[in-house]
Image (cartoon, rainbow over all chains, first blue to last red; front, side):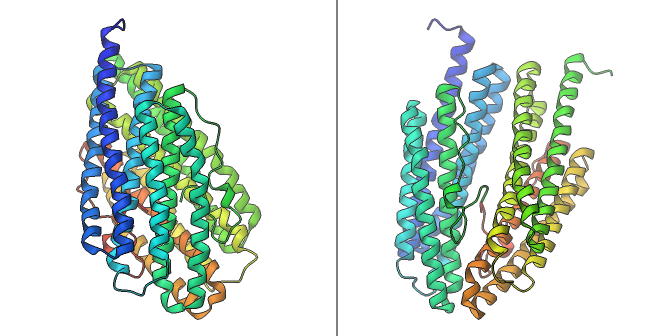
Length: 239
Length: 239
């Protein structure tokens, strides 16, 4: 290593935190996958496992934040290094929120399971969740390899998620209009679709962090959800 | 000042950032107030102002994050000071999300304005938003004065918001069942109520940060939304 010792010590610490992020992200990816499977198959036990499992995800965020605090205190990084640490902390926060959304999906399973079957709803949510899970997986790979092209690809795919979400909204609204008795169940599915769409936004934000970490440049302001501002139920910023 | 110079320099910097937080919080409070007023009065111009105004809120978060980075680099705070800086950064992020929710409410105004009147919906959302705005105002006062009792009061009031939200959900579901033609509009109001409830959760989280900053102690794990886990549309974690 030609680098001064303090810098390489910083890199070692940061890499340890990156490993934690990757482990945390893998758990979130699994939670999204299992929650949507539990929803489709009305598997209340599996859903309960997902709800339980969120504690481990939250604990990982705490662990990462603690290591960040220690890193800042011990290594006192400057400029780009400091921004990298803060970006990693932000990524952990975004992953934690995704875990909460997956948990929220799982919490709705026992509410929906005893109710009426909404034709195709579970399968449609599962498809949407699978795509978001794949975006998350690729974002984590891009993060691990500092792969800017892959991160940009993830960002591009968020538009598909918005499109799927709006199609789902229209479908659920049609179901509600056809049969008022299933309005409450459809409302649950609508919230689930909305939350899954938000997971896509969070993955996109994390992918932007990956690009920022790799290039030091912030991606141009993306107009999040603008493509969907005109449809039945707009998917706006911040929700 | 009997404190060593570096510490008081840190305090000066942190206080400057706290002032920015208070200014940012005031803007968010106004955005919530104006967005709900625009919704009730179907005032599309006012709604557009709220959407525009969110840029200033986002800019304030960036400014705060930049000052935090400079503070960390220059003052290299340790232990409690370091945690205080990170807590302030987290509060700025929570305020930014609240601003996004207010903006999202405003973005739905031009979508809802030409549509059918949903009896009492605008007024009910306005009441809910007023309460959340008051919680935010009190949280900011508690933050400015390090007033733990006031912060605890804010946290206690979140249960009222959850209760109001669930009542609103039931009301909107009833409207949807009675008249399928207003389902889409009711769905918008349902999302707005949900987002306003989330703003309450974020204010609550910020109030917990205030207590943490003042006492150094994390409040016991609050089971967010648990009181509402059994109603028609559960208000779960993370959404």
